[in-house]
Image 1 (cartoon, rainbow, N blue to C red):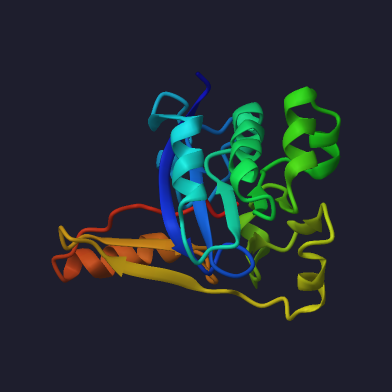
Image 2 (image 1 turned 90 degrees about the vertical axis):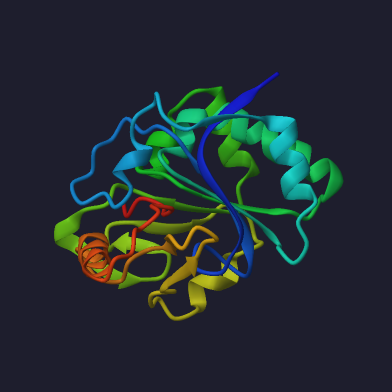
Length: 213
């Protein structure tokens, strides 16, 4: 049975792609972008092994979402399993949307192997390129202005005409009183500053973010 190494999941999110969507952060990334805000997702020996059918059942059973965003970590390091996941979900929900982040350029991914092609062919929207701290910008779903928002189907092509401004971040307090957040920080140094301010007030940050590539 195919498995994915997963850093975390989120049922509903409105700041990592169009509409309300689920998010799967995969574990493991071969890149080491300076300023990465989720360094805990970089090692390949971390995360939790999740069966693809289990994740498909979870995604397929969620109400009020129109699709999923894959982040990480580097989704294309597990491209074959993610493509299989999308196929399984779309057996139940044929119109289920899919977006992914990658630290690699689209052109490089197209030169990749069959697994890369399989995932690209199933995506509707791609954010590509590494995070470059010196080019940080307050942009829609992206951390730096070298990154591109690339429609791979007609589903989300309309978003290219919408204002290219930050979608912000979402914060929530968990049952154990820890704080979690998701999104692309609109300012550099967000994570360090947030952790310092929370620590000064006696709060612990549960790191649940996509990396700010």
